[in-house]
Image (cartoon, rainbow, N blue to C red; front, top):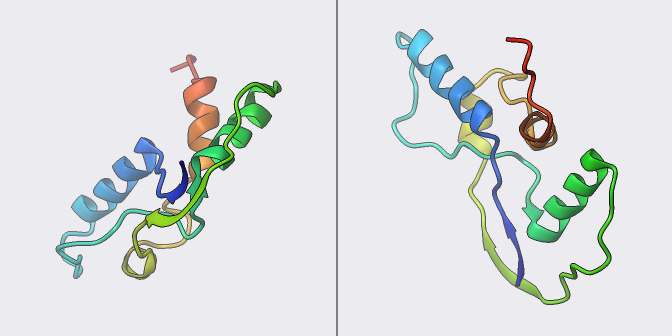
Length: 103
C-alpha cells in the first residue's frame, strides 16, 4: 500500500543531534519530530531513486493508495533548528547511492 510516510536521511538526524549538543544552553524541546515538511509515499521515493540512478523500472507498480499516513508534524522542528540544518531526502539518497569516498 502506497502510504504517505516520513523518510529522513540519517545524516540529518546526526545534524539535528549535533545542533542540540552544541546549543545546549538554548531551549531545546524534550520531544520533537525530526521530519521534513514534504511527505512522501514509497512510490515517490522510488521515483526519486530512479532519477538519481538514471534508470527506470516499469515492472514495479504502486497501484494501491491509502488515506492513512505515518507522518509527524514538522512545526516544532522547524522552530527549533535554523534553516539549512537538514540537507533533505534527495541529498541523503544521492549520498547513500554515491557516497563520497574521498574522506
